[in-house]
Amino acid sequence: MNPNEDQPTPSLQSPPATPATPAPTPPGTMSKDEQTMGMLCHLTGLAGFLIPFGHLVGPLVIWMLKRQEMPFVESEGKESLNFQITMTICGIVAAISLILIIGFILLPAVLIFNLVFVIIATMESANGKPYRYPFCIRFIK
Image (tube, rainbow, N blue to C red; front, side, top):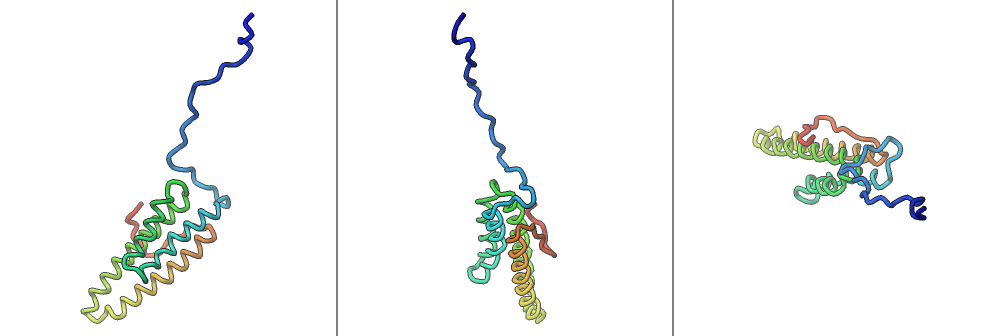
């Protein structure tokens, strides 16, 4: 009898590959980092008040960097980007309507609407709750 027959042979198979996108996180089990990055997706939408096109670049950068590893950032980043694109279009229309005098009312209204709803979205996502903006065109699905 051969002494090596009792021992199992080592497997030469490689471990199973991990999926490219993570499984959705069950509610209540989200990490603090994921909540923070989701919140930053919305909060960086306010960068447009200081930096030209910062309201688009900020959420886009966070979404592109973290969307593969954090499902909450995937959904919140898309939502923030869609809202900021919508607000950009509304701002352009309001700026053009300055010629018709009504733009003097529309442009501040768009800016205040943007500010208020970004703050609400930031607070909701900081608590780990997904937020959907009202009056938002969903360009990125």
